[in-house]
Image 1: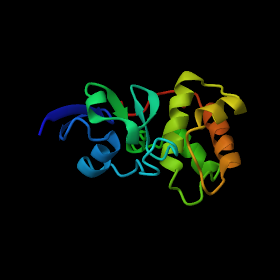
Image 2: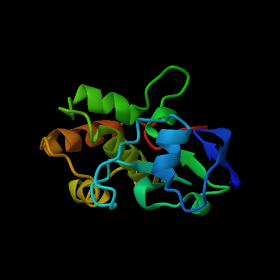
Image 3: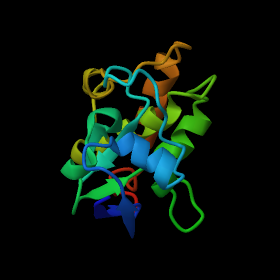
Length: 161
């Protein structure tokens, strides 16, 4: 089986896996990073969203061969030095989740958006989260959390460094 070295949450990780295995499968089953969730498996729900070179990407549709040499950040890599990322803190403050299944993907997608747009409008947030589905319907609180996080000057800093 071929070996690929990935940079995941700021650390090099060697993975022995077929090149067509999904990044989601590699993260969950080979690297034990289970914060990234399997949802639909078709790239439509956003539960598996990770940052690849700073861009929010659904990992269920990303092949391992496509991420060799790229920087991958999962929900586990956002907290730094024992402190939650500002978006994670904002989700807690706004109580922007119920069951929590979509939350990791939502948070990662928001971090990606805030890295490129530190002062998003409600339409910007809706656009950035268009591929993320919350079956509990906490969208108003998610929007509130993003607005709280955007006020933090740290929200635009990438995680996993």
